[in-house]
Amino acid sequence: DQQVKQNSPSLSVQEGRISILNCDYTNSMFDYFLWYKKYPAEGPTFLISISSIKDKNEDGRFTVFLNKSAKHLSLHIVPSQPGDSAVYFCAASANYGQNFVFGPGTRLSVLP
Amino acid sequence: DGGITQSPKYLFRKEGQNVTLSCEQNLNHDAMYWYRQDPGQGLRLIYYSQIVNDFQKGDIAEGYSVSREKKESFPLTVTSAQKNPTAFYLCASSTPGLVNNEQFFGPGTRLTVL
Image (tube, rainbow over all chains, first blue to last red; front, side, top):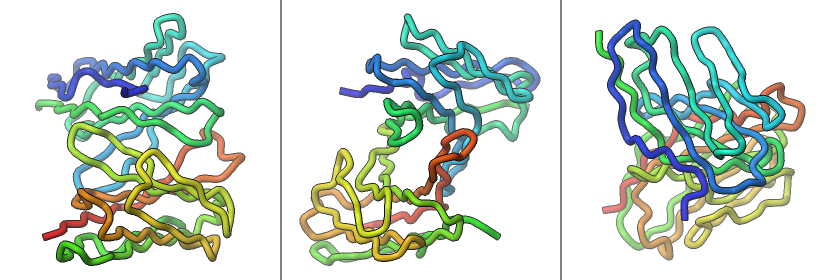
């Protein structure tokens, strides 16, 4: 049973518009969440994080929202750029940043 | 430059052979991790090590073995007991005190067992 779910395997967005990537989790003990971005044949790179004491964290074009009651987080990218085209992984930890459980990823395509 | 290196990038082996994947980091990180990525399944944790000479099984450790004799190195051996070894293998490292507690990943090794 997947503890971290990303139900959209892929998403296409027009350049300049908003990209919204969703992530749901089942383990109420998760208290720390990360988003990673991955290009083909490369390792993931860290994008943005949020702890359970917050409901929003913003870094430039990237904002992560956390809804603890719904066990849901989302990553917003505004405005989307073609270079944002990649696979995005949501990851969750139950011990504040030790071992992470990764979602299956969502492939974002930003169309020029 | 600090970072994590994995070699080789592509590896081919015959069925029944053990193969060892290399992972080296010069970030002075205490913890190191091995994941495998399969299509549609994200990253699954194979083994992790929080400190030298100690390591723990992850979610899918069967058919794999590791060692952590040095802080910088965390090699992964894919044994013949691993039923589906063909995958993309990623090594990562982290250490307590990082601002975002993130893991830093290597470029990965794609293993194909023929």
